Length: 357
Image (cartoon, rainbow, N blue to C red; front, side, top):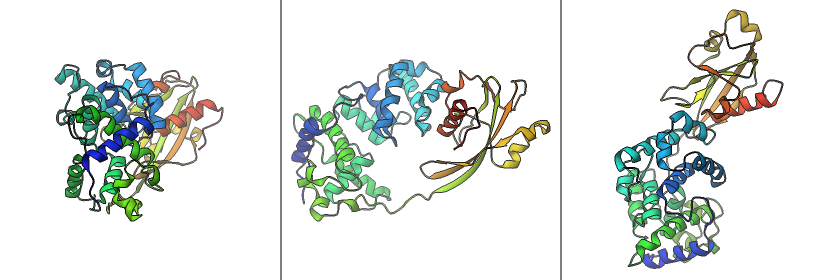
């Protein structure tokens, strides 16, 4: 089944105008700062989660200059709970480079955008096409699914050469003609919307898809076999021990995680690789006051973390617990904390009893 380039793009554009998502807070704008911020946040994260974070970020950092001037701790604090914290570190570095290298204005081409920290090929294309009308294809996970199904592209995407071929194929589907530049923002958004709301991984809504008539996979009745990827990442697990020291006034002892490593750059309860290593940090006179909380599991993309938390309540802040510092009860909620550590501390505050998971 051959796909007519202009007709395919036209169907996507027309469908997006009437049936696509047009009320998201980062839409209906050609402000590259807002589009960039949303694209970074939406990587590996659902729209429903990003909405609130996006609003809070704009309220705190309304433009790239304010974000560049902020401290990394402030950025990580606002990002806390959104996960994949390398995104936040790259976000901060990217804002600084936009100010330092580009005079505070985002580059208008995907080629230059891709040189900035944290901006890959698809994100660069999204910004360039949505904000500047550049004729470049995006190929995030959702759009890969749409393109492979439409074209019946069954080459194994575990191989780099096949991914490059898919990029070429996606480029051939772009709008053409004199109105191509003006059509690009809606086409790009339309491809995102089809992948996110219609061409789903399981039980795709083929009958209401705007490109159903173009789709090889739909015609064959087997859309769920696409995309093809044979190599999968193996899950692993890791046990870590946390020492939760809290003073009577609610302050907690936090240290900053090194880079690279688990939760790099975030503030965290002191973390140890073994129970013995944790116990060695507790003075002998306090060992009988330490309480082991139930082990809980924090699920990452390709790893399960088994968290063993030992809680110690002390009367004051007179003891130094090594690397780190005391953070008061009114200050720790605003620092960059890993999601499970934030949950642990919040539950401890909400209850007169030790936190339970």
